Amino acid sequence: MKEHKVIDKKFAIRYPEAPTFSNLNWRRYQQFRTNWDFSHSKLTQINIRLNHHFKGDNNFSVLVAGSYGRMDAHEKSDLDFLIVHN
Image: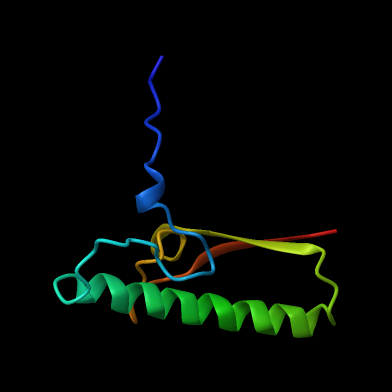
Protein backbone atom coordinates (compact mmCIF):
# COMPACT_ATOMS: atom_id res chain seq x y z
CA MET A 1 0.00 0.00 0.00
CA LYS A 2 1.41 3.37 -1.05
CA GLU A 3 1.78 6.04 1.62
CA HIS A 4 0.38 9.51 0.85
CA LYS A 5 2.46 12.50 1.87
CA VAL A 6 0.70 15.34 3.64
CA ILE A 7 1.39 18.69 1.99
CA ASP A 8 2.73 21.31 4.35
CA LYS A 9 0.21 24.15 4.75
CA LYS A 10 2.80 26.77 3.77
CA PHE A 11 2.80 25.23 0.25
CA ALA A 12 -0.99 24.98 -0.11
CA ILE A 13 -2.88 26.96 -2.73
CA ARG A 14 -6.38 28.07 -1.85
CA TYR A 15 -8.40 28.52 -5.00
CA PRO A 16 -9.49 30.98 -6.32
CA GLU A 17 -7.12 33.03 -4.16
CA ALA A 18 -3.55 33.82 -5.14
CA PRO A 19 -0.86 31.32 -4.18
CA THR A 20 0.17 31.47 -0.54
CA PHE A 21 3.84 30.69 -0.96
CA SER A 22 4.96 33.21 1.63
CA ASN A 23 8.67 32.65 1.15
CA LEU A 24 8.67 32.30 -2.65
CA ASN A 25 10.84 34.75 -4.59
CA TRP A 26 8.45 35.83 -7.38
CA ARG A 27 11.25 37.41 -9.42
CA ARG A 28 12.98 34.06 -9.65
CA TYR A 29 9.76 32.18 -10.42
CA GLN A 30 8.01 34.77 -12.59
CA GLN A 31 6.78 32.17 -15.11
CA PHE A 32 4.98 30.30 -12.34
CA ARG A 33 3.19 33.50 -11.34
CA THR A 34 2.38 34.35 -14.99
CA ASN A 35 0.90 30.88 -15.60
CA TRP A 36 -1.08 30.99 -12.34
CA ASP A 37 -2.54 34.39 -13.27
CA PHE A 38 -3.38 33.16 -16.79
CA SER A 39 -5.11 30.03 -15.45
CA HIS A 40 -7.02 32.01 -12.84
CA SER A 41 -8.20 34.52 -15.44
CA LYS A 42 -9.48 31.86 -17.85
CA LEU A 43 -11.22 29.87 -15.10
CA THR A 44 -12.84 33.05 -13.81
CA GLN A 45 -14.14 33.79 -17.33
CA ILE A 46 -15.60 30.28 -17.54
CA ASN A 47 -17.25 30.73 -14.15
CA ILE A 48 -18.82 34.03 -15.23
CA ARG A 49 -20.13 32.56 -18.49
CA LEU A 50 -21.54 29.49 -16.78
CA ASN A 51 -23.27 31.60 -14.14
CA HIS A 52 -24.81 33.62 -16.95
CA HIS A 53 -25.79 30.46 -18.84
CA PHE A 54 -27.40 28.87 -15.78
CA LYS A 55 -29.00 32.22 -14.88
CA GLY A 56 -27.56 32.40 -11.37
CA ASP A 57 -28.40 28.80 -10.46
CA ASN A 58 -25.18 27.84 -8.71
CA ASN A 59 -26.02 24.13 -8.61
CA PHE A 60 -23.10 23.24 -10.84
CA SER A 61 -19.44 22.40 -10.46
CA VAL A 62 -16.59 22.66 -12.91
CA LEU A 63 -13.86 20.08 -12.63
CA VAL A 64 -10.59 20.84 -14.40
CA ALA A 65 -7.61 18.62 -15.08
CA GLY A 66 -4.17 18.98 -16.57
CA SER A 67 -2.43 22.33 -16.71
CA TYR A 68 -5.55 24.25 -15.63
CA GLY A 69 -6.04 21.88 -12.71
CA ARG A 70 -2.45 22.56 -11.67
CA MET A 71 -2.93 26.30 -12.36
CA ASP A 72 0.07 26.33 -14.71
CA ALA A 73 -1.68 26.81 -18.07
CA HIS A 74 -0.42 29.13 -20.79
CA GLU A 75 -1.68 30.43 -24.14
CA LYS A 76 -1.15 27.12 -25.96
CA SER A 77 -2.63 24.89 -23.24
CA ASP A 78 -5.76 22.90 -23.96
CA LEU A 79 -8.58 22.96 -21.45
CA ASP A 80 -9.84 19.65 -20.05
CA PHE A 81 -12.97 20.22 -18.01
CA LEU A 82 -16.24 18.64 -16.98
CA ILE A 83 -19.40 20.46 -15.91
CA VAL A 84 -21.63 18.70 -13.39
CA HIS A 85 -25.17 20.05 -13.00
CA ASN A 86 -28.42 18.66 -11.59
